[in-house]
Image (cartoon, rainbow, N blue to C red; front, side):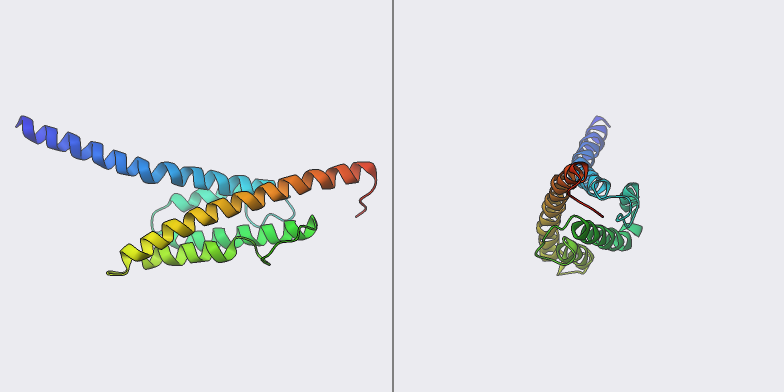
Length: 156
């Protein structure tokens, strides 16, 4: 009887450890996405920043993450245009974000799942880094725009 409780306890600990390994990075990823949308001016923001958290809803998130990736890319495009930031992509972060989402869906396909999961994790990290880079670029240039406007140099 005592061995049964030990097995249940160690199984529960393993489940909590694995959940933590996946959930903690996911939470920090969503914080990055939310802060990225918050960095975009309200008139160019294509979705409310708090809506990224809807991605925590199981199954719904398979579709919702496509929406989130597109809306962030659209917001970045509009904000980069407003701030006159030159980017290498028309919609920064969209391609890698879409690849990440497609690989995540492909990871459900038998025999393809392991490779797709590896690709998903790689694209997820790249997307995360790229969103953060564009957010920082927007913040840096937004401050310059404000300074120019205060000096009367920038006229809209």
